[in-house]
Length: 463
Image (tube, rainbow, N blue to C red; front, side, top):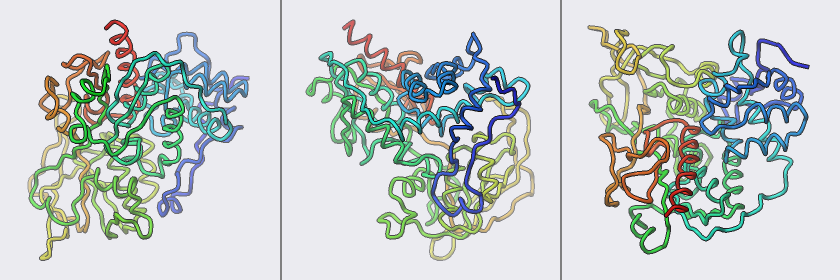
């Protein structure tokens, strides 16, 4: 019986005043009864508009139909045909601007909770399935993947399913890329990422950690000496940007990348951590994206009394997911919108003691369509803080470009690659994800990895 409720089943979650003091997952997931009830809201549209909004083309009505039939493993198998990381996507994918934005139920109410159902199915599989995926018959060809983030893991998984011998070369000591160093435990438990990586290893994918391509090995050596017939570069965009304002070199100024890597990868929040973070009283995070929300919410959990989001546009222009902003507000994050830092102030010992900001107002739209922020005259004020986290974007590390002949990059340092295939200016070398687009979403990186795997297969078979 169809469920014609205009509202999604709400996601159970920890109480805000409890969760803002721990790193346990905020969202608790649907129960079986909630998942069955939410699945009945799907109308099983014949033209499947939701699928058109999914970067990896998951057959959404099909997996939801399996849920209606209480065939949860069958639902997982439908998702797994298109996605190598279903438990991850169910948690961090911006469904509201992708598949759910196309849902017919969203015309007169809330769309079907596609992401919540995907998470339920993946969690059910991880808790109940014991059968390891079977290795495909090898086809005798070798491919190297640089970077074990969402793009690299997806590309590797798809190629392994086709029978390729795939090796991933990861610079850090753990596979997962931004999934392990960037996204906090309270949004994406690292045990889930590890399970997804283990599933790829079961398919035969080799993961070489502590392998910085450009230092340990070069692309030339991988192709000419080690026999890899094609290479996919999914090295991400981990080079932080700063504003270039006075005082950014003071003690207590972090990039969001460094701050989150210390917290997520090095577990700085644990007693006795080898990579501690000084406990701060008042923290300002500059920026308005998902990374800024992650940094602010992490700072609060580390014991800060006040945490500010400092953003030069208004609340409606925040680029972060609506859910992340709502969670941050519930947890007590203070939003200082329509203001911009112009100087970081320090004490006599070289530590941050405040930031000088100026109020902003929104003018006419800029080239991106967003209203341009402009400074208000004579509106400077000082925000008393002892820690500042810069979250204004990242760009790709130039190491691979500087050690590889014939690899074209643009003025932002991003690798130039075909939008559909990922083919770069160098034959046999493909690229995708943040290394090509600059910082974007997990699911878009996965879509690029998926497209590149198909193109690599065609390239090698036609070679």
